[in-house]
Length: 222
Image 1 (cartoon, rainbow, N blue to C red):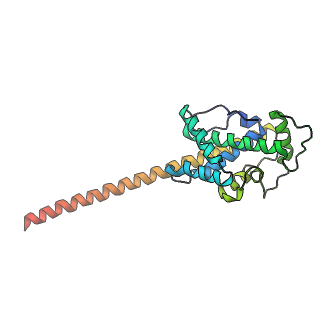
Image 2 (image 1 turned 90 degrees about the vertical axis):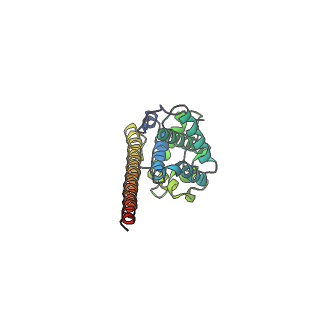
Image 3 (image 1 turned 90 degrees about the horizontal axis):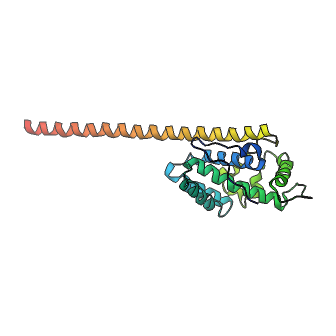
């Protein structure tokens, strides 16, 4: 069973309608958005490499696949941050669905079919059984403890112990809004740093010119 991507959007990143109606995609969207909040703390040039590394630590090959998917989406015209969100949540949704289908701990698997609806019904049944100290990441990742960012994102995504439409929409929208705020803050910080460096460069350059001409004048006075 595989999940299709929700509708692609322009910046700022958006959760999309599927995240508001499908509980597995809702959880995966919240997870991806929280992970992006960690990602944007990295220097911009290192973000993709960091994301690949952290996901690969927790689940071998997952980060490599996510980056490949994000690159494919960007080649099709999807903005960078949206492509990353879509790639991460798609990979996570497929892992969660596979985990549920194999028989998630505590799930009533009798009569489970192959449809998305069947899997979602079981998923909703176990949503409220996961304690604050645990998360779905523990079940779907090979080594969730290997990455603090992955573990936090998984635990933080479990904020809605309900599968009703209102809770799902709120969960996805809140996480995405927080990710957008983190991205914007990181962009402002980088812009301020660049401006400070420019001012410093100009000031130092001006001082060097002043010293140069001052030296020339002194030489001529001798």
